[in-house]
Image (cartoon, rainbow, N blue to C red):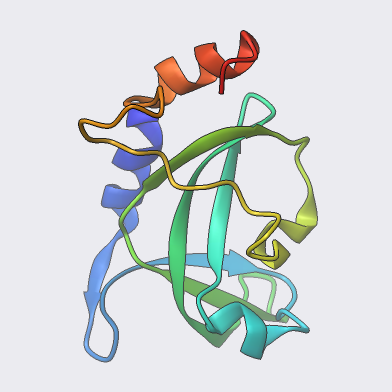
Length: 129
C-alpha cells in the first residue's frame, strides 16, 4: 500500500482545470463514460485483492506513444484504502457498480474490525470481516 501511495504521489501534478490529479493511460475510452464520471473510481488490485481506490475526475483523449488514439483517465491523487475484496486482475476495473465495489476501509476509532489494510486483509482471511 505504501508503494502504491508513493507511485501515485510521484505521478501527481496540479492540473489548471482539475486541480490535483494523477493521469492514467488506457487504450480504449470507456463506453460507459458518463456513468464512470458520475462518482466512479479506479480500483487497484494487489495480490489478487482490491485494496484501494481513487475517484475519477475526468477522461481525456490523448495520443499514445505509438501514434494511436488513447485516453487519459484523471484521478484524484488520494489513495483510499478499501475493505479487501478478492479479485483476479481484469480489464473492467473501472466499471464496478456501486453495489459491487468494496466499501472504504475505516481508518479511525471504529468497532468494525478495521484500521489498516493489513489488519483488514488478515481479518478477511480469518472470515471475521
